[in-house]
Image (cartoon, rainbow, N blue to C red; front, side, top):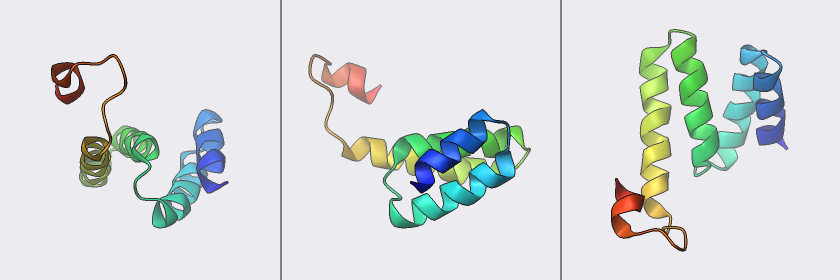
Length: 79
């Protein structure tokens, strides 16, 4: 529910509320790479480069743990 509230808040342009809900969601589910990446983008747009880099790193870390989608080569998935 928090992830959906975060995405809705971001879509409505309410970054502060979106970041609150994203934080709550990521405390329970830090493996949500899509939300990690979204938070990275929002933080970057707000000029919070260090926080953006941290979330971007987490998104990439979790993406590496997932299996590649069917029909994708190893090269496409890793690079």
